[in-house]
Length: 364
Image 1: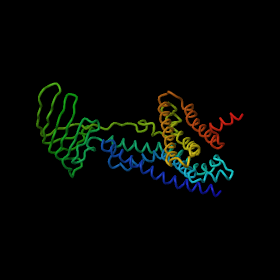
Image 2 (image 1 turned 60 degrees about the horizontal axis):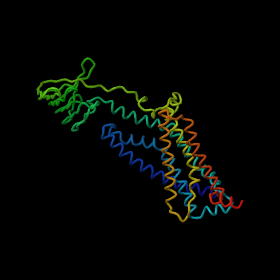
Image 3 (image 1 turned 180 degrees about the vertical axis):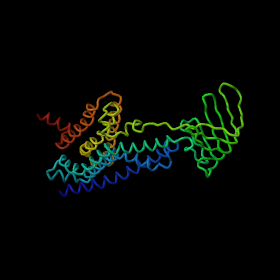
Image 4 (image 1 turned 60 degrees about the vertical axis):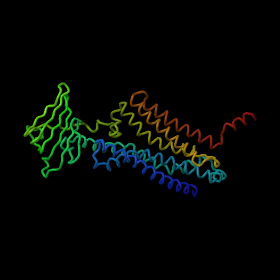
């Protein structure tokens, strides 16, 4: 009992430290990514913190799996280096007897990973999709900010307002550059205002000039106007739920089991199964030579995690395209990893090796 409590305390410290480091790294990466999306106009700059928070929350199952795996490998590798495992083995306990305290420590993490993957992951993706859709569905006037060049929803117009006006329906010193099927036009005006006519929104420009160029005719057409009106393009109503399968709940995926739905369902269930497999695999891979490099075992464990994770991503793509079916792939990947981990753990528990097998065969 004393050994079990001590190893769980060490695992908790290692797990907490690894989790903090990984969350910090992921938050930094997500911040850079979100800032890039805001610069491209995909995300509202005022929603950067929300988008980054929801993104990190969606990536938390993977972060927890990696933190659990690294914590177990690091703790057991240290015990091998400090000869604590020798004392454990000398007391009559084998390597497989460590599986019980490890599972006692890991089962809450596995439950949290399953909850996040099945429930929180689609909710976080839905919140991000709603923020992006609301920002993309603004009309052209709502996109304009004083002193900044802003692109329209369909990318065919560029607006500029010199300074803001006390009236929210009016603006001063307006510049509009538009790309048309037959050419390009540049319109400038001293002032502009919004009006609603026959249920449609129009922007009326006053005291300005319009320059047009045509792809079929040479030369420029310059015209001056006292008042010029243009209809605003309305935002398209796009269904948020149908935009991305990642935003659908697990119950909706089960209700409509097509290829894309099953691929997403397999990814979510795979995260929970991988969290359990990582406990057994970490115990099997934690054996280290005290004379070897301290980081060699950890690097090999990280390589195993990357390979496992990439196979999950590849399997999701295969299931989505119909190349493989869900249940056979889940049994082959996660069941195969579990069988390999148990076999490797059994071999190290019983001290099986190729050299021992050859010696026994020669003796026989």
